[in-house]
Image (cartoon, rainbow, N blue to C red; front, side, top):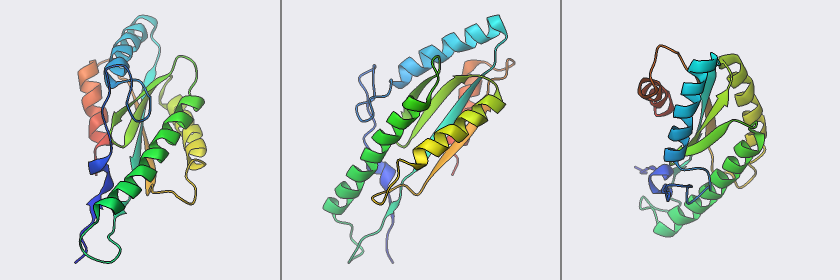
Length: 172
């Protein structure tokens, strides 16, 4: 039996409190501080805000000639996937409007906060999907990219909303 290893188990995910070491996107702490400000502003001005989650599903690593996966093989596939994460992060940033912000909040994904309701967020996610699909080329190690949208409900606090988004983002 061939053992499959999820590649995201070996992807770099660390930051210095300001930016993600791999992609250069803002650190999660900065994202959540900005999100708290956006929620407060949204309450004052009765403006909708939404989060788009972008989860990149890396390939499972299949050993070539034996059931034992060579470290070298993992590192090569990992390197290609990390390059694609960097490219996708740059692509997302380039497609965001001013006032929107994002962060890499997991080994294999980003969250984007946009000023707008669910319909606007869905349009934005379609725009992101169109442009990120161009990132993948013949060297692609990405199985698929999943987009989900969650509009902030004024009856929720930030912690409840994040918990709801986490449930969607980390769902199998």
